[in-house]
Image (tube, rainbow, N blue to C red):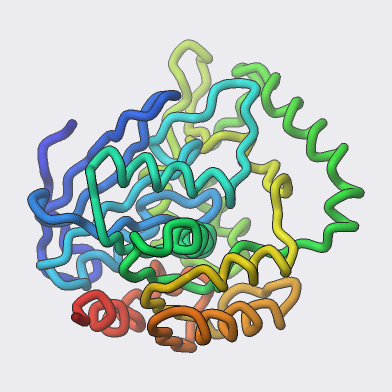
Length: 312
């Protein structure tokens, strides 16, 4: 565990930040703990193929008295990859992962903060353990992604073959890039959701120097290639709505405008409609910004997030 450092990203107040590692059966989950280590933190969960750096610009703008633990999900950032032979069922795996972390620290009355995939995982955990979650914040997603099951059935074989290909790809075939080339590649892949500076923030944990034994110069992506096979274990709308009915806690949902372009736009509203009936409180905002508005324009949502976290 490294020594604490301080950060004042985006002009926020200085907060102590410490790199941490949480042991799990396949290795460890890495993270950044912002603020006091003597108080139970908010658990922050990033989006698919992002990392804990996703919150680097928002955390300094939030109340100093509220610590935050932002983790790298398995296979992302600095966290251990799953062993060979294991699939990433991204929306399902997160429930067990959060449970492991909660039990490891002995937390009660959990508060979760999630962006995209992380918001969906917060939703799933709050539904699975409704009496143990006090509140959760979801940024630009309502619940797990819904996919057309006919298309999913038709693509299953291709997904399996891609998974096996990535799993057996020799290390020598690992693509490596120069720093600027890597940043520009990621910037293009996000298709306007992030800007150059935001990509640099994400790539502090999202890229690594090529292993010396490969005799290659440059950087490679730190995340597990198998994460690209993300269609396995998706949900139907009926499943998502059934989980929404189980949620009891306070919910803050911040939707970016334009935010993410969801395949089925009506799903978001249907999930929110159920939450308004079942959750103890629902606060909903539509705020101008991209899907990564918490990273690119954190000042636009910091007040709403702070008020929700501080509310008694």
